[in-house]
Image 1 (cartoon, rainbow, N blue to C red):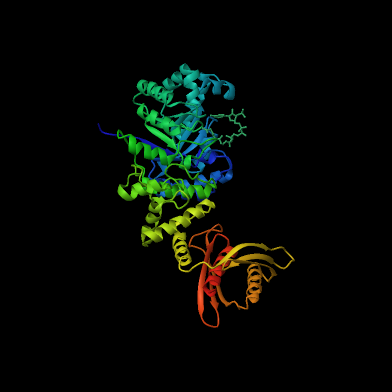
Image 2: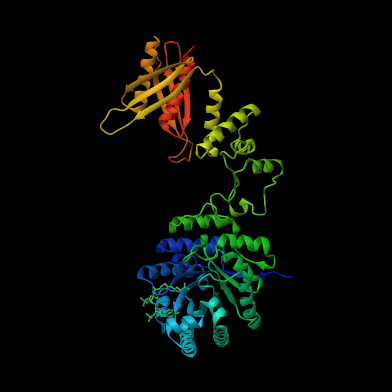
Length: 507
Ligand SMILES: CC(=O)SCCNC(=O)CCNC(=O)[C@H](O)C(C)(C)COP(=O)(O)OP(=O)(O)OC[C@H]1O[C@@H](n2cnc3c(N)ncnc32)[C@H](O)[C@@H]1OP(=O)(O)O
């Protein structure tokens, strides 16, 4: 059977913008509109509700100006109201050519919100459609609250459809306005309508109030829906709409009878752009586009992938312009680390690999986030620590830093098994720590080497919670040498580097 081509209408810029707290600027709307039509290749976009504001008018104007020059005008839609042509004039002035006329799809909404009878409503709709036609505007019709209409006033819905069949309407849009449908109902309702009007075009518009958006979309497609309304990142009023990314993956992987034009490869790019412009962060576990969804954490999974990609599925990250990652933390085994080493082009022998694995597990236990970029630092720190015998140990210390007071420290260290304690002050916390050590070593008639360089760096791309490497260059009468320390706290990493220096100079 030849697959059926269905239309994907993106409504991020209209329904998606109804996410509480979101307002796109004109230039943001234009940037998103271009990406949706040119790169993601959705069939149509809905970019605004008419009459909203001057800013919205300017945003529509900027999109329609661009769309006109690039032959996309028939793909750019504006939601309008049954308001004696006020919305039509608004969208005409803003250069739009397709109206999505919002009408009442349930008797409840018609009776209690518009306070009209069906005949009054149909007459006004007919007048609005005629006016639009006169002005060269194409009409699609939303049957708002259609899902409840099918449950509670089915006769009204079918009376409405019989009326619409006589009208110059291109598409009829069936919204589950409150996201209350189950997949079974979505299938039954769409099937009943499509069986009655096989030649009319029906879009299905899902909301995600029960997290059933994608499931309902699948059911509606199986029942014969001709188009879908989706939003990037599932944005939209309340719990949002059916999300673009997972819906597209579901169609491509599970519905061979359905054909779509959307380009999976740019889904992630578009999602990140919308995240950025909207300020609504994508949850880390959001399918396809979340930060963690292609990251294997468990050592056993990494091991299986090392042996035969046993934990792969059809949902390959490369399809969406992403890559698989192997997390480093307390659930890591050698396999996770090997996967990350491979990416960095590094190799370790079995013994060193075990030591590095152990250190990463320890860091994970301390809730520290370890990234691939941290690995070279951890490796050099771990392997460095094993190159000398531990004769000096920093047992404990208190460092104080208070505004207006000199930093001070209390330090306890063991040298060859004997414990020493000292209190000291300094120009900074580390200086106070070093002064305490100097006092301890004076009692042993030993002078500590001079600190001649102190360098701090964090792995590339890290943030303030990153591991921090401190490399200190020391100079004694006999030699100049470097030691390094690694920790998420800068002073602690310097103290670790100092502890190594003490071990090197202590015989
Ligand atoms: C499918 C959906 O998500 S629906 C969302 C549609 N988009 C929006 O609502 C966002 C943009 N809306 C707005 O900017 C404003 O609500 C406006 C400009 C449309 C109207 O603003 P106001 O005149 O201040 O009215 P208000 O918002 O208080 O109430 C809505 C009015 O629209 C009427 N209305 C509701 N549905 C429709 C409809 N399909 N067609 C025409 N009027 C409608 C209501 O009956 C009410 O009219 P009333 O004040 O005479 O009782």
